[in-house]
Image (cartoon, rainbow, N blue to C red; front, side, top):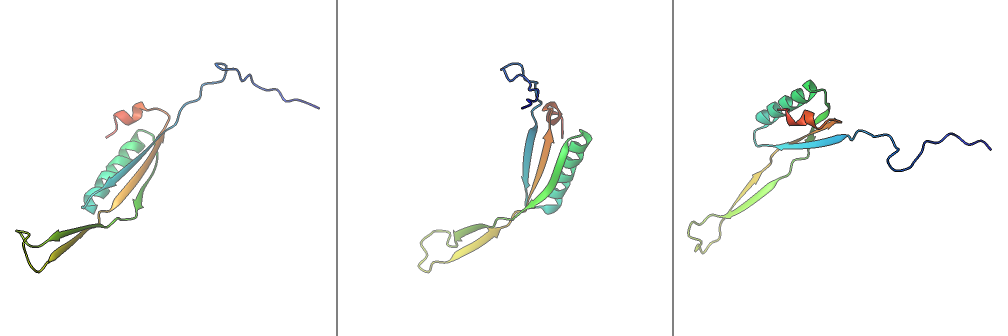
Length: 107
């Protein structure tokens, strides 16, 4: 039976490995044009710093329902309600790097 050469596994003798930092940035706004512009600037800055970038990824939109009373005094006999909804789009950008200093000066 042949045994393969094994590296020592004692604490302190293993080779140091670089830690990979992963960042997920979620952007949301009512204005889609500004959201796309900010996301494009963020991706361009990350690629200038030679970071690995995935995205932008569109997330499913969440509907925010807002229900309010119509009467200003609150003493109305016939209850009347106003219904509003807000659907903000969201984008997610994923970045990976082994050096945390690259994230500090990006932007």
